[in-house]
Length: 342
Ligand SMILES: N[C@@H](CCC(=O)N[C@@H](CS)C(=O)NCC(=O)O)C(=O)O
Image (cartoon, rainbow, N blue to C red; front, top):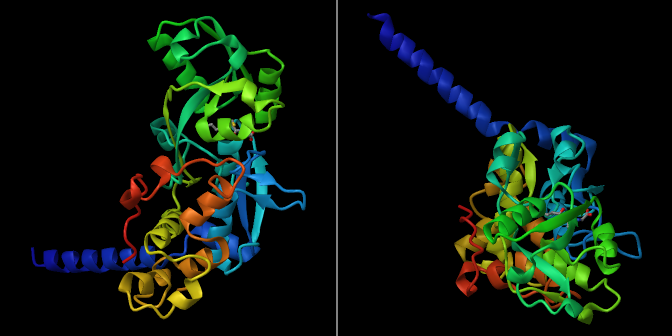
């Protein structure tokens, strides 16, 4: 009986040292990335606005900028990234096998993907929805008129599954043709092999611009699914997941606090506590992520806040001209809401 308090004491000591070990562990992925000297990011094989290679051979897009923000937070250098282009079909295997550290590739967060692949979804970086594009000459105005349609899309995507649900629910017949590359899907659609090109709305906007005569095509009004696009990491490395998640939240919070690439240096003198915490001037939050305290400062300085990243790649400063819509801050009519840095 007398030994019980001793056991309790030992247990307390053991669990608190375990907790301390967990708190201070940098996580296997961060150590690997640091040791290697750069981040390996899986991106799409080419999707305007998300990840493409420009004529100077440089990767660009929202997904690419997110990789750069993570590299800036870790190394203070946005260029310390190696990009691996991945098809929708191969993206999860590349992450599971350790070929990439982070999947930043227009990937929809679903329960099955989150629970059965040994992977973790970080948080929504872009709220998307599935749409349907048709040849205007078909004279169709609504998805309800698509009985018997041939639909082109990509292999290994949620798109395929949503089509099946939508056509079943509306008791419409259809045929589906799938491809590994979006440009193959586009060519097949343009050549008239299919009546409909279906994918995420952001991707439809991008692909429509590549058609010879974009005005001859029409995106139907229906949105047949929710596609919350999220960065993905391997399960089992919580410190790494925390880094990726808080880089995303830092970019969104920076926009909310009005911190931009241009004013960030001046903001170092701000008296607002939220800004001081974000920029590493108060509370040493970087330490808790096993990062330098200027982790978020570097990400914003080198890549911009969420709004700047959006406008540059998808919004008014890009050829796509996509409205912020759901992807505006919660305080500006959208649903972007990042937990506080404190
Ligand atoms: N968000 C959907 C669709 C993702 C997807 O792969 N879309 C295609 C259609 S545009 C794509 O990104 N293709 C780019 C590529 O070929 O790598 C998902 O997670 O399944």
